Length: 113
Length: 111
Image 1: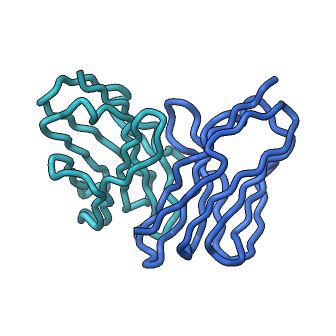
Image 2: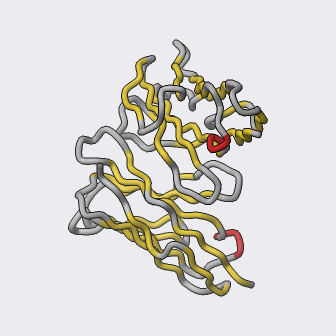
């Protein structure tokens, strides 16, 4: 069974640009979660989507946004990139609802120059 | 919001030694998950715990859900070089809506 997939693996942008990161959940999972992991730090919760709706949002500015498509894949958009947005962005999926075990993808490494 | 603490923050051990780490909070958590993250990769789920007092093993790994529901422990027996990585705990919050992640314990295994 395929795991969570993320693309691209690496992304390099300059300050002020926009970045789009993509995630495909495990088949049968309808919840998708996004986390930011800055170098050497823990996971900071960004967004949770379930059944196409945003269910919860972490303490991040509005320039971090996303959506979930009818096939449950998800996109994370980061506008007006800042240097401190450089991090590993991890996507996880689970069965519907936040109480189920989350399975992570390999991440997208975003570098902002 | 609810927060988790992990200790130790980092540890260096000799290959073959046993490892103990824990995850604590001032709040009650329902369900505990333990993950391992290799450098540059996503965390991999190791063990899930659902009931207070529950003790679960996965090979050389053993984890326990604390009786008070405010802590969890992970033990690794007979460590090997591939155990190197960051171990994260995650607890399901009181509302049963979200998992809160700890800051991680970084494990280094010396040959």
